[in-house]
Length: 429
Image (cartoon, rainbow, N blue to C red; front, side):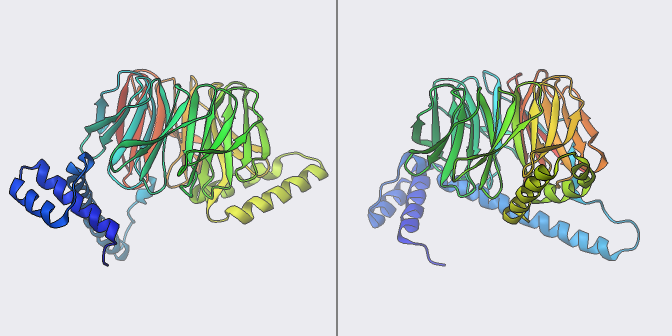
């Protein structure tokens, strides 16, 4: 397939940057004369970075082809079958322990395409790491106070960050430069998430507000009001139609993203709620089977039951096969709760952590919940076994474990802590 004029120009600039940075002056002068282009500083390393990514992708393809061939052979062979690799869990010791931040690590997020993991910290820095080699790559500087949260757009071309300096920033992941600074919150901005369309993002703040921004213009297009306290974090459903926010007011609010209306207020936690996470399609399937009995046993009068049934029907119509029927929350009351979004019912309370729960997420298989807390542990809970803890990493960090992210491409779990360390955990069956 032929390249467009713009793509051709970008390729030529990358070639020029490569020739210049590697000392091929004669070739650089001749090629520049032929193309009549001048590369920017960002083009000096772009071709090398993209080539490394291509090599990694070829390597992954080869590994997947080999694994597929092995699985096909095992399927034909008699005897017990190999365990599903989607059920891999983190194993000790950590694959990589990475230092570089000079303050508490507040957020960690994997790039959706490349072998890149990004962290933010109380040192106002955003750091980029190669998760395969464990090498530090670069620091993104620009915020003037603690960077609280991070989010990639689905394509991985932009990174959003939010900070205690009252701003959000959008970063170009090809040049690693700041594209835009978004301002409008009146206090510490503690949560940010891109919507699945990649065109908008939402943020929350200690000013009790949630704002929706247009990524292309940087303008605030909608404000959501209702919480009575600091809005700590946000989660967006896989279809982008629903958003959940958690707050110091001990409630979770479910919002219609487009209309800005609050659909549900979830009240069951006894302390500040630190984090929320929507289910995906696999988790929906597991939970619907495992907790059908709990849903039926919840008491309610006829009118309330009819209202719940109607809400559940609407949610299933929009989310069937996509995900987002359920929500996880973690709180300073040391518990994790599983909610049915349509009805607002708390289906299960997971008790076991000995301190504030900081981060919760669903395992890619949908069968497990992964959580971290100020008790220094990472715990894996099995949804098919009444929420029993089936794996616990004691002293995962020397101090509090503040954040988690799971790499959907390669089974690796990342964790950050108040010990200023990023850890990458290899996951095996």
